Image 1 (cartoon, rainbow, N blue to C red):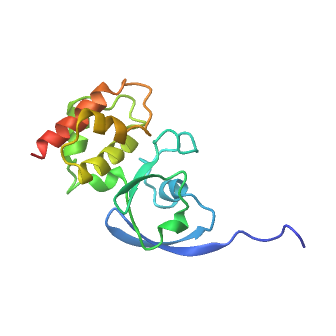
Image 2 (cartoon, rainbow, N blue to C red):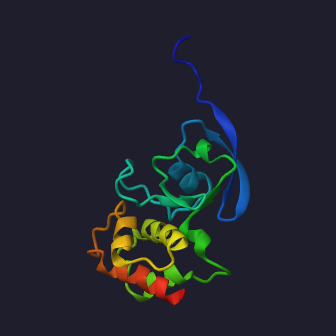
Image 3 (cartoon, rainbow, N blue to C red):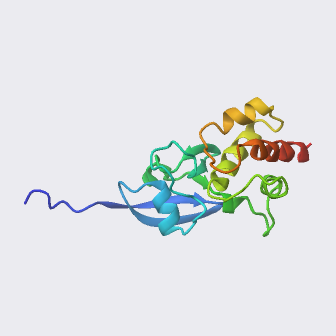
Length: 162
């Protein structure tokens, strides 16, 4: 019987926001779908489904990646961080706080991806220039802010860490 092959699942062991978990996932499941549907982390947004908008940006072993282009099974044994993982004891991180105070978020749809791309930047370069911030956020689109408030937010977070 041709075409009757059932989708294959495998056990995925992955660290999500500092906690290890194991789930059965389809071989072809995307990380964005796994995080939203299985793990229930809805900050990870599905925007373009093609890696062009940045709404699904997460950190994979500390590097910003598009979850809509990443197979969940490729995360086996690795660390995935979402914006929920930046909270410490229920308090926002300096970057999250700066986005709030500097009005870096408008409608909020792009904000988690913007924050995660910014977090990756600040971890490797704690005091970036405006041009370095723009370059780090080049893969993240926003329809509301014009980016000025977002760049100001990242700059404020970098200055807060001095």
